[in-house]
Image (cartoon, rainbow, N blue to C red):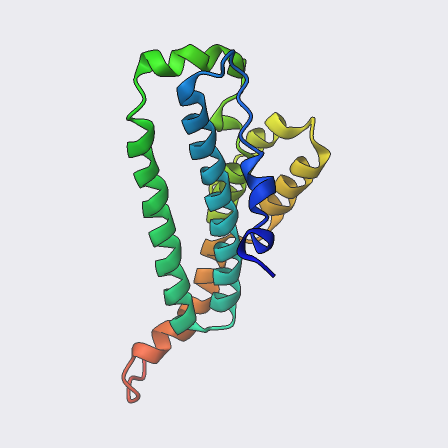
Length: 170
């Protein structure tokens, strides 16, 4: 197998389809940055699910490692804003009209991440009612235990490992 086959590079590079006439130069940057955000959201959700399992299994060493990975990914995502800031307002406005009502606010994976982390607002699902697959994913995530729930479930065992062996409580 080749690198480009394994990563499906040809298919990936065909996903940047601007809507503007021309298309406008900076529309490519905008699309790629936001597609990369969606890929990072996918990875963070994957890691959060894994982290929940590690916490529930009291595997604190792997859980800490996974948490560090999530934090590193989030730092990378925040750093991507620096790239977007290289686009002037005028450059953004040159294609913004072609986005119509589309907005990053509509990212289903961002909502999934919010739900997984415990910020559950049921009204956020209404934006995805037209897509049953996405709405189902959001509903599942909304009804599932959160990362906080997993953390709280392992907390008593974790705390006990740090107490002296002769500690008898209060």
